[in-house]
Length: 113
Image 1: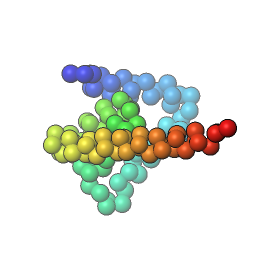
Image 2: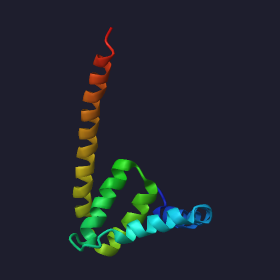
Image 3: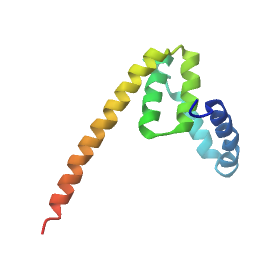
Image 4: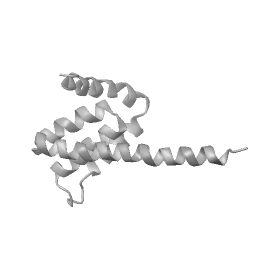
């Protein structure tokens, strides 16, 4: 096991209390945002959690991975489904590095003497 994901999830939930004490409106808004996710019913919970995990990987958020892995299991996500979704995340990250490499080359060219 690379990390204790159950502990990560639990620790993040406990730590949220300190943020809530200092900025309750933000935490209320964050919770409302999460509750609104899927409100239209267009995507099922399984699909939403696969997307969430792929995004969590691309944004490198361990807390997001822990929370959405737990929710994905509850939604019935299998290892094979997650592996395919993560393949998309891996391909996108490589693609993003390629596109931003083009931008860096363009920026360098902008500053020619």
